[in-house]
Amino acid sequence: MTVIDISASVMQFLLAFVVVAPLLGAVAALLPAPPGLKGKSPDQAVLRHGVTVTGAVLIATIVLAVGFDHDHPATMQATTDISWIPALDVRIHLGIDGISLPLLLLTALLTFLCALYSYFKLPAGPSPKAFVALVLVLESGTLATFAVLDLLLFFLAFEMVLIPMYFLIARWGGGQRQAAAWKFILYTLLGSVVMLLGILLIGLKSGTFDMVALATDNGRGLTTSVQVIAVLAIGLGLAVKTPMWPLHSWLPDAHTAAPTVGSVLLAGVLLKMGTYGFVRILLPIAPDGMRTFAPYLAAFAVVGIVYGSLACLALARTGAKGDLKRLIAYSSVGHMGFVLLGIATMTPTGVNGALFANIAHGLITGLLFFLVGAVKDRYGTADLDTLAGATGAALYGRAPRLGALLAFAAIASLGLPGLAGFWGEMLTLFGAYSPAEGLSRPAFRTFMAIGAFGTLLTAAYMLIVVRRVCMGEHTPHSRLSPDDRAPQAADGPEPPGAAGARPAATTPQLADIQTYEAAAWTPLAALTVLAGLWPAVLLGLTDPAVQKLLAGGKS
Image 1 (cartoon, rainbow, N blue to C red):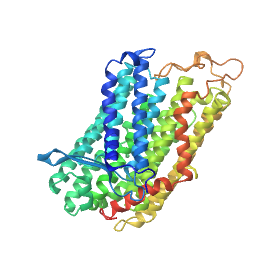
Image 2 (tube, rainbow, N blue to C red):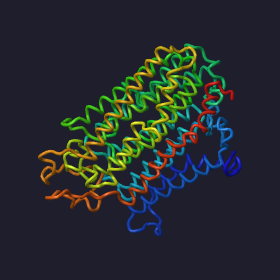
Image 3 (cartoon, rainbow, N blue to C red):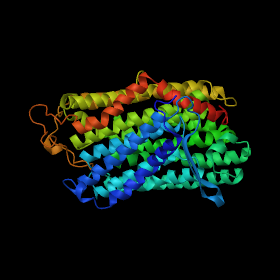
Image 4 (tube, rainbow, N blue to C red):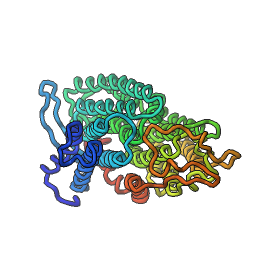
């Protein structure tokens, strides 16, 4: 069933447009604006250009979803297959199925919302032209990662996002941005070098880099030892990007230093590239190798769940001087641990849960980073002790709508039933209860119990954050004097109304949610509720594709 019947050639064009348009838009952003499109200033023109290009890509992606045959989500659709490097049998092979389509939509939506937000709230830094161009290159690389069906093209797209994210952190970030950017690039590049060796091993031993052909073969053309080496090499590179404990240490620094939109894209989109690689490449192409490493992957995943939660609890306690952006970053380590646990079960239930948790994390954590960025702009700091002690009422008393939305996002993040965060974690734990044949049930049930304990820890630190940031703490010094005010955040100047919001004898007000902020945040909140109340929309796409993937290409 398709909502609108669109011809195969139009679908092919739309997918190619989605991948290539941001790259062309990035080039155009660096050129002088035509005289009629300059607006009030060149800066305004290039920011409008970014909104236009990302908006066009989002519309094209929605049309792709509308034209997608939802009766056959396991079939690759909108496919393009052109020979590129005949000597290596490398092809420009594009296509989407029920696994990649939701990730395309998530990427296009988040990038458009970031471009819209930046039009009104550009982070402080160098030329806006460079900023817009980097965001568009980042979007193109991410969309290509989810759309290509050739291993070498996948690697190129996987690497394409590193340089723009490095510069977004290094040039538009806050304190310690240079060190954080270097840590990000070094970790991910070292992981990618090892991943490339694994990809080359698969291609040379099987005679093809075609991901569809390799998935259909289901590892029959590769010996067990080759599969084990390939999973170890490719999995290491993917684990760094995910990030999996103990390869996660670049993430908190990168998130803390990144500008708001950089944090949104890093958490909402880039982390998904690693887990997508596990599902698209390793599960179908090297099943024996994955079965060998699945218990270890699950063990690292549940350690990450507990470790991330304990780190958040340590940051949230009074007197710890914890940074709220850093806390949300550590929460991502825990949430991505659930995704990895679902993948490690190698069952349709677990993998579907992992894919659902991927999308839910992108929506919820993207919203959280938007909100934390807004709080930092208003207060001039993301320090939890400062935020909690600013007034006795904190956000609920100073910016009630902003406080309410932050509480909503935090509750969604802890996995409240009825919101998107619940289904992925529940399905992942169900999958761990009954893992694939050949995996130890006692071990995975132990992992399930540890993961369930992690959900309690998640609820604990998220509720502490809501209590402290939204309700505040009554202390003798509960009102922040102008002398105690922290320096201005690096994301840019304060929004209108915040500069004069210095405490006086009564509780001062902050600028509440602005119109442009509501426009950028409302879609994420609405989709979080929709996915929580109607999970079949997403599971109906992913389940048939996962079933086929795990069955070796057989529907």
